Length: 316
Image (cartoon, rainbow, N blue to C red):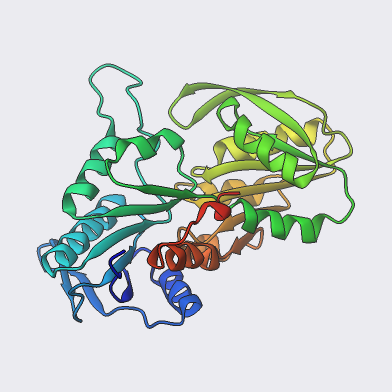
């Protein structure tokens, strides 16, 4: 087997703190790159060190502002490709546009597929991501995709905090049942489902609980929290059903619009998220939000990828 070049980690503007933690975990310096904008708003990228023959990992979530961060990622990939990097892995902790993964109405794009094509064309050799909204998005790429799960990080925190309480893991919609069932199995807890009826994008009309939560700790589990409408309405439904304690547990803290106000006013005692997306200032001030780092999880996947080792044990 041909030996892989030197391992190098670079970051776009969306994930600099996480990239620094990953580089620290791997005991290597964070690569030097300039990612800024010209006066007219165009993105400027310049790699400030030699990457010829290197094994390059670019850490960049396509989180808000999604279009800007996506363009930064594309330009960085193109820069590394033209600088003759041997392999370029796009590390995308949060894959934006993932909810637009199919045609839900006439004359709409499948944006998740288009973004996959753009990333591949820009020069990515493989993708490393975290908790894709839909697993089938892996099939949108014609290059290898490793979709890690934040489950071990979230489970470790919950197991230390729940003691011997009776726990029910709750899926806030039917689409998340498989994720919640797997989580409940590993937590040795029961499972409940909330039947959610939408009347429009990000607008929920009613919720019905399927399962028993009375007198128990309810853990609402989802892959992301965006406007927090679904999460907080589900928390209200669980309080009405008699849950003694309600926790939210999500990988990606999008937290757009009035999400923080909703979380503050909700029955949620704690909202547990990861640092796949850096918190905005108002979210950082919210005492209900607990941030767990996925740096060691992603860092270990990068180390094993670089050394051509299996990472299947990380998919738990």
